[in-house]
Image (cartoon, rainbow, N blue to C red; front, side, top):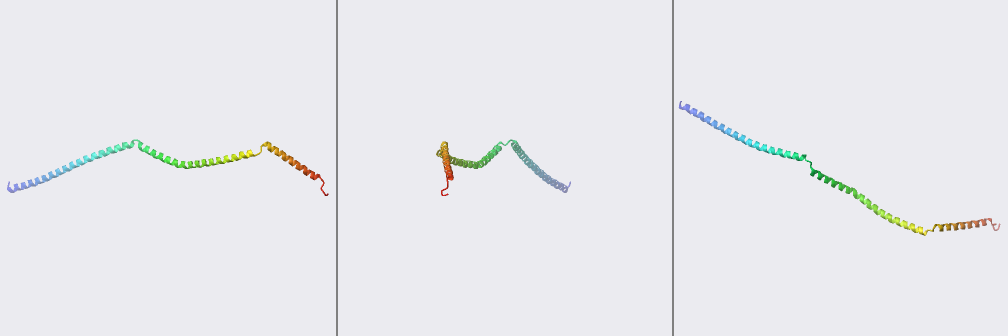
Amino acid sequence: MTASAASLRRDAYAHDDAKLAALEQRVYGLERGVQDLNQLFTGRIGEVSAQLSGLTTKLDDRSRTPWATIVSAMGVVLAIVIAGGQLVKTPVDDAIRRLERDVTRLDGSIKGVEREAREAQLAAPGRGELEARWILEERSIDALQRRLDRYERAPAPGG
């Protein structure tokens, strides 16, 4: 082989070596990228697994009876009912107080009227006394009637 042919071969080999080195570099870069992707996916899969586990826990928690919420809601409802009852009860209490005051006043008035009635009853003559008065009045009326009758029968003066 001639020197030029050997030189050509060496140049071809050198060119092939450079290509091979470039290919090795590309393969190394791709391997590195695949490893990085593998690590990334492994990390992401772990995160997704943790999130799914958290979601499962939340769903399990939601399927439980929320007693704390129910008791709190009952407390709020009880407070509203008490407040509403107080709002309804206040006017009723006021009306009852007014009625009690009026009843007390009426009782005082009735006692006064009863006292006056007792006094009038004590001041009024008894039945026997009234009958005696009536008899006296009847006798007085009879006497007046007899007098009138006498005047009517008597002759008129001057005539």
